[in-house]
Image (cartoon, rainbow, N blue to C red; front, top):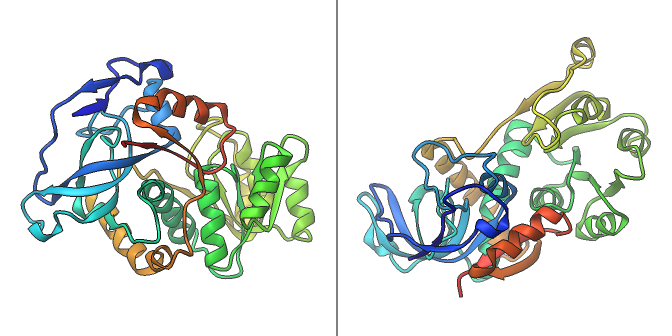
Length: 326
């Protein structure tokens, strides 16, 4: 099969098609003929040599995909062959065929295309586990989301609308802020021209937000804490501006703030399968009805993966970038 499996780190030009053996599904796994694969920032970091795959994961890039099951391993019923699915994987999605744990597969309904389905798993699993499970988001809560027009940001806006959250986002231009508001964000702040701490205080009448979903880290963290209401929850999911921060401990104690966070990729198949089951119960009905679709930026043919990574690195995209195999 054709796959993208860089032999060494580098720029987008290392994303060349190479020949690799078609993988075989093990127990509890399925082999998927890939229709499309989502492009995510961790894959850019892996290509750069900054984010190695977890032990045992495929060195082939790609953490989410859609396609058709063409073979099954032990403990998976043969009638699943032929089923269209999308899946979260630890690696291997940038290929014509990929293996996925069956528990991490979700059925693709008629309401979404295969390209749209490939853009769902990574952001949906991430936002659901962090915003709704770790931060206990509930109807009426207010949430500050950095990177409002990223894949994570647009998914947070979409889920926020469906579950009754008030979503405030930051973005790097007035055009992106307008796009975020059009998608359903209650407010959007241009962090390059406005102080997001002051704007959040003004928007909330000085109260602050219930939750901050942060993918920035570093010096943003103490500023994020200033945005939180009493009993607020801060959830870290990435550290683009640095992996350490200075925390005002007494302020955290006085206002009863909660600091938490998680990484998804290294978690066990058992954990991710439980998340998939919860998503099927709580979120997938919205996908089946067409009420939840990923915000799509651009699709690129598989062979144009370098252009897809270049677009992601430029930061001008709104929503998800995908590679299509056909």
